[in-house]
Amino acid sequence: MNNNDKFIILRFNKVSFGYDENKPLLEDANFFVRKNTKVAIMGQNGSGKTTIFDLMQKSIFPDSGMINIEKETTIAASHQVIPRSMLDLTVREFFEKSLSKRFSEKIYDIDPKIEEVLNVVNLNCSYDKKVRFFSGGQQARLLLASAIIQKPDLLLLDEPTNNLDKEGIENLKNFLTGYKKTCIIISHDADFLNSFVDSVLYVFNKSVEQYVGNYLDVVERIRILHESTDRKNVMLKKEIQGIYNKVSYFGNKGGRIRLVVKRMKKKAKMLEEKKIEVRRDDKTISPFVIPSQSDVKGLIVRISDFSVMQGSNIINKKTNIELRKNERLLLKGPNGIGKTTLLESIVKNQALGIEINSNVKIGYYRQDFSILDFDSTVYESLSEAAGKKPEGVMRSVAAGFLINSELMDEKIGNLSEGQKGLISFARLVLQEPGLLILDEPTNHINFRHIPIIAEALNKYAGTMIIVSHSLEFIDQLRIDSILDLES
Image 1 (tube, rainbow, N blue to C red):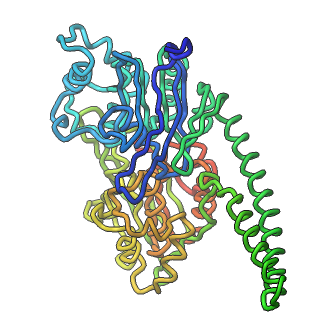
Image 2: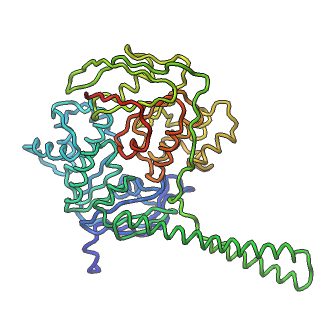
């Protein structure tokens, strides 16, 4: 063993993998992770970041190459969804089951451990409450806590700040800064990552590049490299075009000129091969506009009363919210109080105390993407949203959200969460809603896209109701009124 290897907890050696043999996600990927380091994985949505986590956990296996993990290394990961088999467990039973993955014997005096880990994710609840009665955001916190409570040698966190409020993010940041073992994080929250990360794995073009340094420094180095690549490509393009101009001029001439033309074509081909592929991760979505429904006027939404959860009690509350065209409402309140439930009531227009203009078309962005049909292809989903619009219009909108022709044939369920988010925004553009309802629209979205999304929402001329825990995102939006469900 090399003396340096004893400090390495994990190594990928020429690892290749693809769910479809014709569409590999990784090809000959090489990298290593040192013990007791904090590593960020960055890359475009759908580049294979979560797949790398699955390979580390051996829930899938490489098509070729080797993954070496130090013997007896314990691994825990925060997953996206709580299994149905665990929904009827109490909080205490849920954590007992999580710890049983690490320890074979029964864990005694577990309550202090639960209290400590729930403090990290900023969740206060009864340990006898069943998991199914928590909101989606609260369940996400329980999943995060279930990984942290195991205190593994290798902690894998996939978008851990989603569904965390400001205090929860700060608590998690402090925990990870003090965590004495290895942690690998996928996140689009640049400021969060920069506070504790000491190296970066950059998934690009089916390979993995490795950088040492804090997150923002690495992002800047990649940006500079990208600009250098662009300059080289521009120079090569000019040289290649000059050669082809000469080929066109001399192409019809005979004799020895024909040999010269052949050599020029060969040189142009060699220069083409020297061009470096533009890094897709540095692409952002194009600026876009969500057109608003033009044939709807007057009062769009009226909310006179609603229900919230306080502990295990349902409390009815009165309010007087009236929204007309081009007015925006922000719903505030902690996880589990009933924000998503209120949004659902508005969409379905079935609850007393909520009135919706009967002519209004609703565009709904759900944080769990369950409004999408996971068995449909991207093409089918966008076509359904486009209605009678020409296919060319639909494909143009899709391209602006980095949805290429290859992605069009994929089933929605096979996509990354970030890609599902971009498809959801593309559908809103095609639907032209008069009422836009957005439930945590920045979860899973690459931070480079956030300013463009904020700009589009500010230009939206219809009525908008939004829920978001991202204060930085909300600060970029025009908000006319706030309904705090807790007050």
